[in-house]
Length: 414
Image (cartoon, rainbow, N blue to C red; front, side):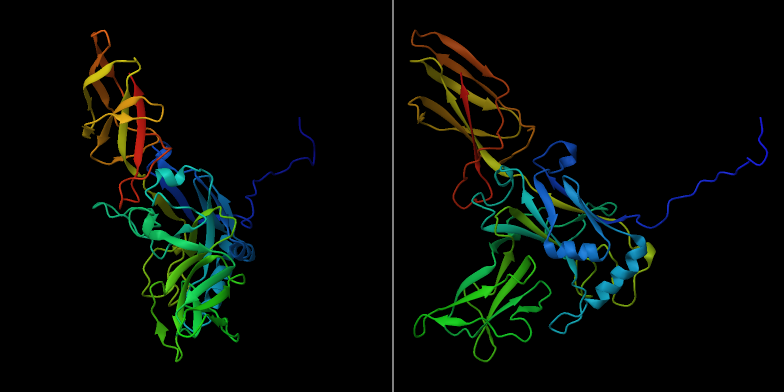
């Protein structure tokens, strides 16, 4: 059936290009403690700092926490505005040219066991020290084959103890040498941020003739980031003291953060290393086709510990003889004397002479063999296979001088 005048032509109209987001870069967080899901680490909640949230909003960009990492998105039609912003911000307060504009993110721990299973000093507390990462250090792992498409956000293969810095809050109280006349605070570009241009330096309080001085520095007007504190003498000459210059991380005082991550948009100076989502801007604006998704990875290494097995007889008056632990690629040494446990029972202690990695699902397989001689004189064969593997918690301190290792204890009743 046809109806006169009712014929219509229907065509598909593609969505408008506006409000379409493209990923500028992504950061995945990995940890080789996690043996599943490609080692993705779910132990952090990621948030942009307040100053970064303002930058994202002003440039029409978006942030997304993806559980084991995060992504930053931009709208392609706004790329020109982003490049103009970077050029406008290229002059720092010290008058030096450089593209130091960056996005800063705080990674807060959601897993209380993270420090225990990670190759960090075992006494690390996030209220005193945080890790700092930046794409100034980004590099691709050299495997001898094709270039790795993912850039590592660490100075080496993993984010480790070398990236730890003391954390400070709004008020920074310092003790400085007697000859100090000025306290200088600079950001990662080397620009002086305290004292701010046109302001007086922080007042130094003398504690006596030729005695150290005290000074209080207010950081509250600065964005959360890594800063360097240095000292100057009477004529502006730098002063080198046992703890100066020093780097500190200014982070929220709630003690929740564990990592502060700086992501520069583009190479700040021609001499800078690193890998950046926007190509260098020293000569001209990068072509639109050159600005695309860049994948980074923030890698963590699992703690290696010495494993200790305490073998305890469940039969009163019995003796354990000819005990032996075998399996995998580790050697165990038996202590010559039994160890008295807190409950009064005696245990035979076996220790590894090698460090073994902690894993969510360990590949280590050990078995215990031996004899238990009862009070009646009867011998019973012992076979425990497999022995339990080291848990993620608790992890006890390792030998003196090995702060990034630890000790894992397991109790086996036979």
